[in-house]
Image (cartoon, rainbow, N blue to C red; front, top):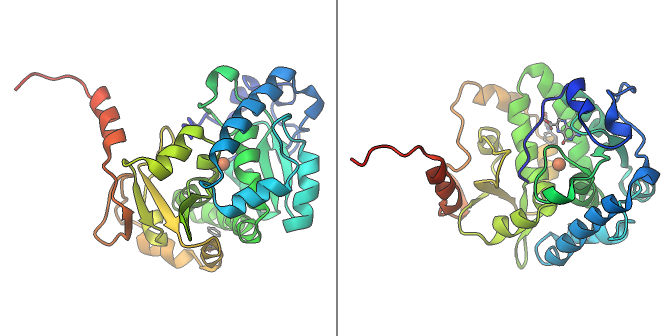
Length: 308
Ligand SMILES: C[C@H](O)[C@H](O)[C@H]1CNc2nc(N)[nH]c(=O)c2N1
Ligand SMILES: N[C@@H](Cc1ccccc1)C(=O)O
Ligand SMILES: [Fe+2]
């Protein structure tokens, strides 16, 4: 999703967007009013551009559950969705709500929301000049990418359990390990379907270029999901992923939610981490990537040395 994470300071927020996001949070849980009536025609137009581009691409590429979730929600091309209307439908289906936040919120605030089945969504939308660039999650990523999946009972329970697990992992000092599981599932996960690989990760589903790259490009590895392996694998926040991890079906996520991670955290403590593009002999490979995309980038940024 080409996201460059900003530092979480009240100063950072002041440089933020729109009306409601202009000041440091006043509520302890960092929520703000969505301020739906304050969106300008230009902002709705950015939503429309992104929405139309993405909804043409996703049938046959996003998993069936994503497409069904989108169909049943009050989300369309014409307007940035109203979080209250989304929450009404979500609440009936899976007991989730969407709440507005100014952008990235501190980990414990994020986890506390998820543990209570509230999904914090950025209220602002990216600039028209930066359609494929995100400094922090905006309303298109959070709503278009995540909310359809929250209509699915397995994902709904999984993300709540992740919130509970996040609060616990923070206390144990192992948040980096847990965050990789979220990254390689909720954000960048692929799932097998009868007719081939499909997208369920929101970071892919909200990105035009990564939708194509993750499924069709020869460059990335596509590897069967293995929990311990993923917990040890670094990820990229600034470019397409070098490896995607594939689950057999969405219910497999529920197994993960029920596994006690504490013994795993202990077992992998001090063991080496894997780089994003590494392939291990123990991996179940669906595709061995050529690595060409990231290799070309690395070559382009390498300093030119002498000719010998
Ligand atoms: C580890 C954790 O999942 C991650 O860093 C959190 C932090 N705060 C966030 N805040 C928002 N609004 N959205 C997010 O996805 C996250 N992610
Ligand atoms: N089951 C994990 C928490 C978790 C839930 C869902 C997703 C990822 C992790 C634990 O014991 O900490
Ligand atoms: Fe996200």
